[in-house]
Amino acid sequence: MPAHLTGRRPELSADELIGALVPPPRFDAVRFGTYLPNPDEPSQAAAVEACSAFAAKVGARKEKKRFKLFGGGAPEPAGGLYLDGGFGVGKTHLLASAWHAAPSPKAYGTFVELTHLVGALGFAEAVRRLSEHRLLAIDEFELDDPGDTTLVTRLLQELMDVGVHIAATSNTLPEKLGEGRFAAEDFLREIQTLSARFDVVRVDGPDYRHRGLPDAPPPVTPAELEASVAAHEGSTVDDFDALCEHLASLHPSRYGRLLDGVTRVHLRGVHPAPDQNVGLRLVAFADRLYDRAIPVVVSGEPLPSLFTEEMVNGGYRKKYLRAVSRLTALARDAAPAS
Image 1: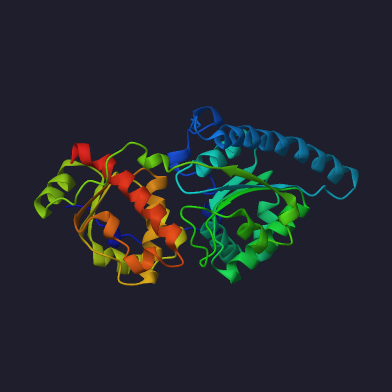
Image 2 (image 1 turned 30 degrees about the vertical axis):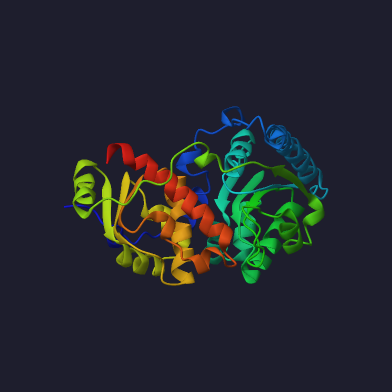
């Protein structure tokens, strides 16, 4: 009997939320040495050096903080690093590499995971627990939710004031429609009370996931999809509409846990997302699939048509393009063995 994602309803305790603040499986083994800079993009090699230097600072500043704490003085406020670049240039690789290079204790999570942590623990308890860390790395800092951005900015203020370093990547504001760019000025504007503490590191270049590679494989037939389910242990299979409905019932911070133990995801009857809410949930789901390097097999319509032309040309353009880029890579991973 094949497994279904729609039959799972993961729950995470407060301690599990803290314990889960580590890079996702795709980035377990990444290091600065495994990042391959594009020789045509000098900013990439420069970014490796800048991120490595930032990671080296984390331990040194923390030792100063400890000395001052035991000496009765106030801890020295910490600094921040912001990686600015389009999708597919390796920002997350660099962010995770900085996390791996920095001394413990340290935490790594997406913006969504961080806001869920604050909601689960309460603001004061989240500050207390995260203050014990040397570094907090935040991937996909969401600039399109003013309330959550204000909440996290306040959290970062308190953490940096007690010496916790912050490293971040982000998306862009909804009204910014530039092709594939994540503008640093948007990030700094939204965290204006902290902007002077962040150093901006540019990472330019084309989307590495599609450099010289073919387009997404076409959807498989229903029979081919069922054959793939049967051939791969740990697979799940779901009707696309049922999965979309299930995702709506879960907080996006649980999407990763939804995929625990899954080796391959199969979706029947894929078609364009009916509205923006469904589309954005699919973006978050695609990110968690990509984090875990889980191949995807679909029947129905091609993956590039998952988001309508109106969506792709609207305010969340970059999110949708990133999701298509990542899903295309995952579909290619599945194609040879389908």
